[in-house]
Image (cartoon, rainbow, N blue to C red; front, side, top):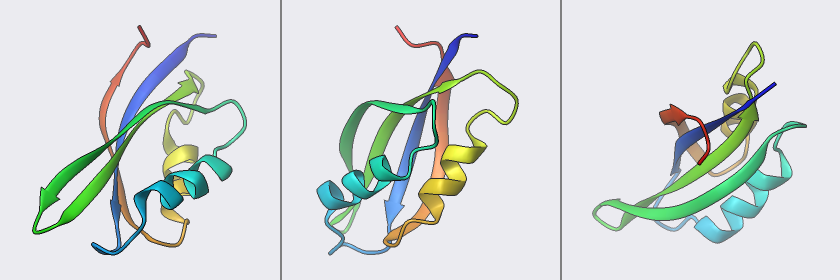
Length: 89
């Protein structure tokens, strides 16, 4: 089994959402076998910032769906979007 690196863009519910706290809460709900490989905060517009995470997941059936569903259920998350998939380097 190999690993897939999925870059995910997590949009918070508002400009006042603490992205550092949000990242901690997202790490806490990661499904077994998934891990965060990297992160950055990306300005979007009008003070709104997105949290971009690179998540390593096994290349099993279902792919990133369990991670996306877990992240979407976290309070403070408006949306989760996979922006890139590839092999970790």
